[in-house]
Structures are given as structure tokens and as C-alpha cells.
Amino acid sequence: MKNNNILFNIGVVERETGIGKDTLRVWERRYGFPLPVRCEGEDRLYPENQVEQLRLIKRLLDSGMRPARVVGLGVVELNALLQDAPENEPVISARLQEFIRLVKTHQTVALRLAFNRAIFQQGLNEFLSKTISPLNQLIGACWLRGEIRIFEEHLYSEQLALVLNLAIAAIHDPNGTPRILLTTLPGEEHALGLLMSKATMSLAGANCVMLGVQTPVNEIVLAAKAHQSDVVTLSFSSAMPPAQVKAGIAQLRYALPQTVALWVGGSGVARQRKADDGVQLMGPFSDLDNAISLWREAVSYPCVDLAALERCRS
Image 1 (cartoon, rainbow, N blue to C red):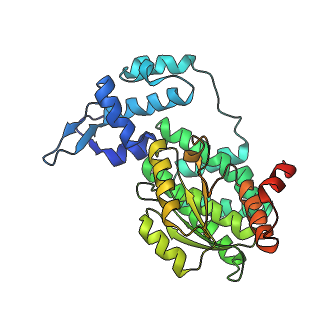
Image 2: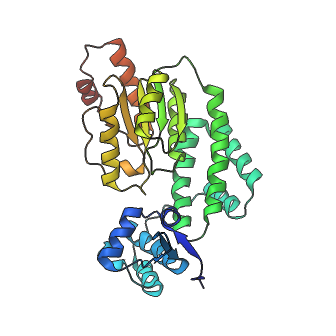
Image 3: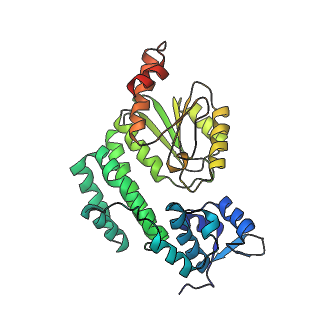
């Protein structure tokens, strides 16, 4: 049974459930759930049993149900709906199951060694696309089901980051092109997708500089100037509200010189219907390879209509 004496602030609840802060506030007004208590500073604090309900709600939303049907239901009712929900999870290979087991049993060194072996066997590109991309989804699903905790997800992310940074260091070309600056905007704390993008683009011969996460727009502009960046790349997770994603992209695009390209990717971008002028939305990591190739062609042949060229390739 969950201990209702344990209270979590809204930032922790967002990370624990994958439900954005703005969404939590809207549900509170619209549906009367969740029901946080208020501390002296009027900050919202959520009991652990409500966090468990929110995890279940997120799983049902991911299966296609609408918030009005599930928000506010109790744990018993939510679990009953989950029994009837369509099963969307892929078959888990023995390799991925072993990674999950190492995370759940807190075998830090063994996890790092397993990552290194997989890179050696598969190569970095295949490791990212065929191991880490599906593994990230599985870790997220386990997290939502309460099968792994925040510290275990952090263990996974930290060991993967160590391995990827070493792999990137071995292939980094300081004279590579384009010169790419990678970061996230304030409110976006997830760095793993950004690091995977850096690995993919470094493999393609780009010179990548990572600023880390939550960089203010004016600082991104200053950094792009200091590093003479050709491209700025942003990453958004699904926890970021679509309106906030759209506004952040527009603000940065306006602030950057027109000569600096803006590439935007991550699961949070999938909900953006179209890109603003001067912004390129990225889907799978293979889009990054294509974007780099097109950028180089634009530099070599500035009179070529690259939009028409891209249509011909498609």
C-alpha cells in the first residue's frame, strides 16, 4: 500500500509519470483530480497514491483512451481498464530483457559492460537504432508501471551516457562540418535524446558541441555566435506541452541569425503538425544523416533548390 504521508512536488510528479505540469494543473481545474495539498509557499504537493493513479492514467492515455474517461478513477477501476486495453508493447528480445534485468538489479558495472559489448558487436549506429531506441521505450514503460524507480532510471541513463560519451570522443572531428550546437530549452530536463543525436551526427562527420540542458534562449544565441555554429539542435521529450514546444521553437528561431539552421527533434516534436519557416523537424535519427547531407550540398551548391532535391529523393 502506498504511503500517503509521502508528498512529491510537481516537478517530481512530472518526471515520475510523464505527464506535464501544465496538464496536471488543467486536470485539477477540469476534473478535480489530482488533488494536491499546498505548502506554505502555495506550491503543489502530491500524495504517493495519487502519483500511482497518474502512472496508470498515463498508460491508458498511451493506449488511446481520452482523459475525460480515465482522469480521477481509482486504482481498481484503472487496473480493470488496463486489463481490457490493447497490448501495444513489442516482443522483447532476450538482449533487451537482459538490459532491463541489470537495471532492476542495480548492476551498474555489468550494465556498462553490456552496453560496451553491444557497441562493439553492432557498431554505434546500429546500437543506437536497434538497441537503445527500443530499450528507451521499454524503460519508460517499466517506469510508468512502477516496475523501476527514478533512481533506477537515472542509473540506466548515467551508464548509457558514460558509454556514449566515450564512443563519441573516439570519433569526434573538431574540423568536421557542419558545426552543430546541441541543447534543450528551459523546462526540458531530458538529455538522453540529445546525446543520441550527438552520437548520430558525430558519426556523420559533424563537429558537435553539447551545452547540456535547460539553456535560456539568449544564452543559446550567444553560444552559437561564440562557437560559430552552423546549426542549433534542440530536443523535446513527450513531457513538454505542445504549446510550450511551439512557443520555444518560435522564440529561438526569431532570436537566431537566419544563417544558423534550427533542427528540432525528440518525441515531443511528433505532435507538431508543421515546421515554421527556417525550422526543420526531425523524426527518426536517420533524418539527421539526411539533414547533414543536404546542408553540405547547400554549401557546395548554393543555387540548388534543396527542397526540390529532397522531394525527388523521397
